[in-house]
Length: 285
Image (cartoon, rainbow, N blue to C red; front, side):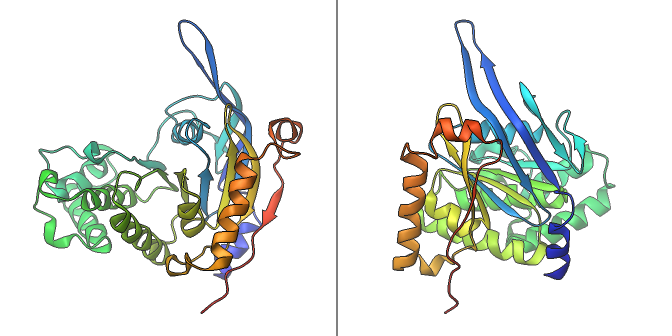
């Protein structure tokens, strides 16, 4: 852990600096986010948490380089993000993100070959390494239509991690799964992180999921999204969700998200950086 902790004292890996995102339609201008700022360090699991319509998916698309900020700047390793690149890979919510005519192995190999990173033999080897990490080696020759939703998401995660991006971006990747599969996918994601220590920016509207997946949580207020607060969550394990402390933390975050008080939109607008609120550390069993 010392290497990661050391890095935390250096320049952040990813900086989102005063980013506003505005969509212009034929009839009106829609402000999705207003002057959002946060930093992500190497090996962080940073979660953007907020209600539907708070601009969190738009922010993720901006980090990926799909939409340019109207105001502010996004920097990766100190360089402004100008468009999409293999250093930022997105896993989406939809199960149809895998070309159906390619096998599972070919799906993982495809971006490695398309980006010119690796030759065919090396791409195949790396694909097989990451399919093993997500427990899908036996399905390498299967086609996506034969897989369950959770398995398809595992292929998408393997494909993203095989690119070895500087930041893995996940846009509500488990939202369409049933509760049991979703829980298993959360466990698998954390086990993968323990092994690979990738840097993660994860979007969700589930407070419980944010607490389990993230070590830091940015709370976005709705319409337009502003960072209302930033929480240092120590990451609660899935098997402790029934505890009173976990439920109390969920309630506290719910109040922060939805109560209009001093931390409301006006307060957030006045401070370029949101307050950092420590959450109680989980006790080890």
